[in-house]
Length: 436
Image (cartoon, rainbow, N blue to C red; front, side):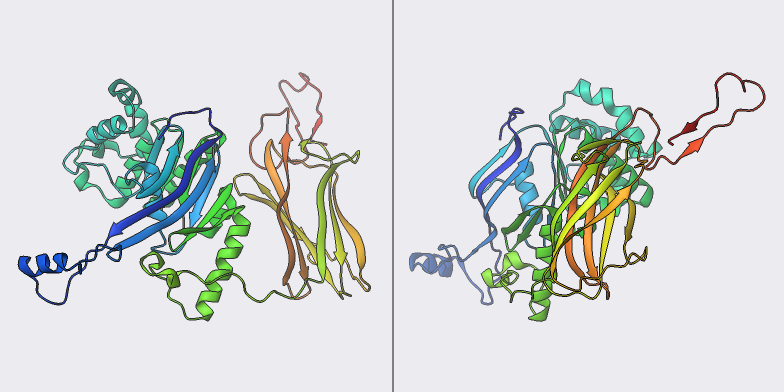
């Protein structure tokens, strides 16, 4: 492992294999003599049949500053992968390079001594994670405050509930100034309040350019919150790339497995036959419409990579219809970088008629006279549906852009408004409209 912070990649795995020895209970009684005879005759399982390959030649590169979500069935090797990255396990073969200080939230309460108090465990874990005693003590009160454990911080952690364990573990892991944060979905045991607080802390990590790797079974979390997705199945990386594409492939394979009556548990413990089926299913019939281009333009027609909150913009969607389409609907969804949906609509909802009586090309323009968003990163997703609501084409986060504003207000939108000052101070400044 390396602490080279100049590398553009935070985590690099090359052809990593992790094997475990099976613990087999024989059906017949054995003695030392019988086992020695079996060994001498070469009948003992020394040829690899007694080994389980939890990971099978994994190649994975996590760029610095990105949030990567890992999905897969139970037993597919997700947790083993995180433990290898965290240094808990060593690979059987292959190499793992880590660039930067790493902090991990894996098994609940891992690394805590049950008879030590929360305060003592903070000190021990901070030192284990690479901090000096003075550094841990300097951040002690900040960690305790974030955990919200109050007087329980001086009680033995064996008296803690699972939620209290998680709060303490998360507080320590996120306050030791790591470059890389590893999370194995233990946040599910937290209450709603602390879950929101944890998400806000991880969002702060993202904005600070930290690298986050998280295992999740919530596909919505992967799509809304992660920059990249990795699907692991039967110990292998099946797909790595944009979250929407990874989720699409995963759902398709799961649906195909259910149709064939395949088991959905512990694929890594089985032979290759335990993996989800190949995605080489019969091709779907061609869509009657194709999205050729999606672009965001300013009022002057130039491409808008960033705009002011008071600017007007135009989302231009170019398309081609292959067959006559009695009725199509174009929809859009505007989301903020943290996954918050700012606005969504479509031509069906707004009763904008569209009929493609003959094949050909065209464009649909969504014109916004004044954007009115607060500063931040946003993106449009464009969807084409038929009259029955079936999705024909979709472009996820088709055009990301930045909104800049000279006003330090908060929230999502900046509505047109004005101030009225009456009585004392009414003549200090003229009344003016804001955001018009």
